[in-house]
Amino acid sequence: MKSSLSRVVVAAVAAIVITVSGTARPVQASVAQWAAVVVSVVQSLSGGDGGLERAKREIIAAVENSKQEILDHIDAIAAADVEACTQAAVTKVAQIDSMPGSLLGPFVNGAVDCAYLSTSYFNAVQGLPAADNIGKLMGVIYSIAMVGYAKYGLSTTALLDSLVGGYHAVVARLVPACSHDWMFDDNPRHIYEVTVTCQLYPGIVGTDTMLKGWLPGRPEPAIPYTAAIAAVDAQTSRGVAIAALPQLLAARG
Image (tube, rainbow, N blue to C red; front, side, top):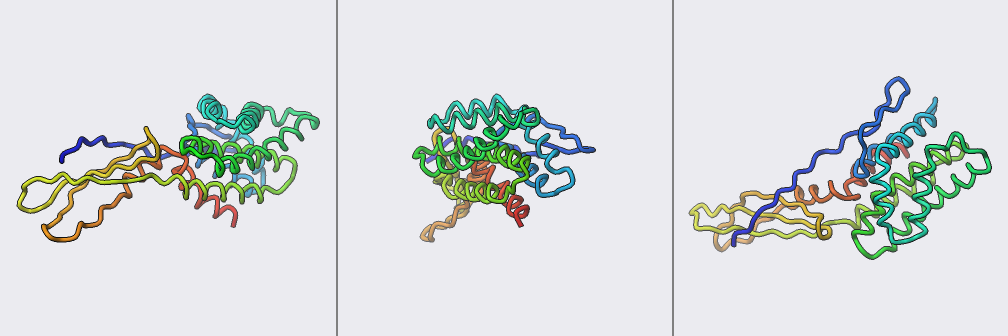
């Protein structure tokens, strides 16, 4: 049976923030690219020698360049407490250096509580679209919380550990379901086109096509799903987590 093929083409994620002569230079950011942002923030905080100032510039620049997309994702959060704390952190982080102590303390505490709340919400929420949505915001929330904690001179190790755990949960949970179809015809070589389709939830789909031989009377050959899964991952928070985890683990030591 022939089936139509819709090929998903996904561009590789590029770095968002480049530090040149101590100045953060943001490229147009999107939530799907926050792997680069959170890694840059963590590396700056662990590097010493002005690392906090670099991290602040990086997180503020990245938030400002993708604020509307972030707010759109926040609007889709079903839990009112997670929505409110995330919106507050994103909206107020640009003023972190001008906040008096009476406001800075509550802001930092709120951002840290919100970071932990986001991972709890991810683990508790039932629907995959909702889980993917909070997964996309996880790096944003934790980056803000880590910068706030560092500004107070506090260790960010526990926050980094929690983010790593959250990203591991994202990778484990948001695995797309895949299937494949053989497009049989009467060619004498018994080499046929195979279409692979993977889906995480409706609208988030990746496809791949290949030629495979299958001789009559022989077992079906293995069909690789790797490319189609990668196409789905590039649209979801699972791709963000997969990209960020190796560098976050390296920074954690």
